[in-house]
Image (spheres, rainbow, N blue to C red):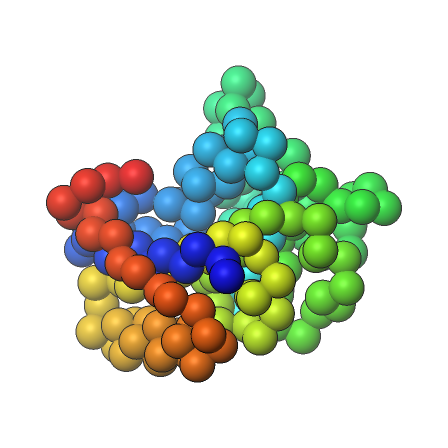
Length: 151
């Protein structure tokens, strides 16, 4: 069963309050541990924002990544994916980071699932639905409070 963690975000403007920035930090850490990762977004526009954030990392912290359908045959270690795309080339990754408003049904194929609970009340409603969806998929999600213990 995949380890499923929902990070409780802060109301700050730094990475602890911004799921896209924290995702990039998690991608850097995962890559340093040779963990393949899929970052799942709601739209191509969101995927392109995350792609741009990853390109802005320090040269010493370069994270090989690509948007779905781009890059080498097997994809880069980090693939940025979005709703409606081809899910067939995701099987060689251990970690799914979900930035989408819904938890994708294919999430169960990963060893680790990471999701976020933003401080915004409307976003919390969607996060609660994803948490419930994780339980319906047979997962045992847990929470991690970033205010108490940053990643």
